[in-house]
Length: 240
Ligand code: PXP
Figure 1 (cartoon, rainbow, N blue to C red):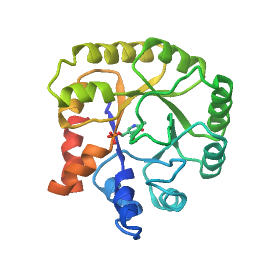
Figure 2: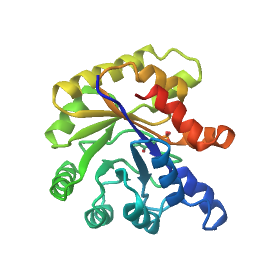
Figure 3: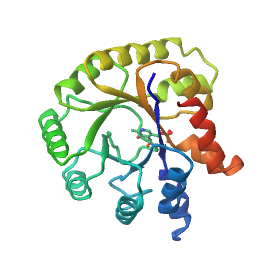
């Protein structure tokens, strides 16, 4: 079985920095640290309001990081322009609402579908791998294929929430499993992300067919107690 990739989202290093308007802790330093600790990629979400990562973080990370970085962007003209200029190896298109605390759900693929198709094709021609962040439902998997995406990232938020609260997660797990099977059948690379902890990642890592996990908030939080290197290595043992 091939190795599952581990992507580490470092947005919350920038959140801590921005809370004081200082230039530390540095997201670039975090990205290089993550690389050294054995992650396969670094994820950063450039939001419209720049609440965590900003344009100069993106520029610095692009110029210094050796492993691929995965740029999460909303489907807007502004983000398209930036992504075309910076040429991230990986791009994940995500929905974005200004008032939300985090990315609350998957993309609505029926909204501005032609625009979405246009940006996917432009970014693919620019040599970025394109993933769509979607809910685990079969229509969205089929639609992602129709839109010519390379990958889908399944929003695991609902599942993780149930796991965290020790509630019954069987139904959500089944939805994820079914979505993974169809994604693989259609030739899409399937990823998983949002809300993952050691416990939820352990359950999902048993599903064959998920090729990449993107993990941020819990991982950065846990590193306060045991360090970033140890936390990444702990996830590395789960995601392998
Ligand atoms: N994947 C995507 C597409 C996301 O938008 C996020 C959150 O920014 C993550 C993964 C990471 O989620 P978390 O920070 O909850 O681990």
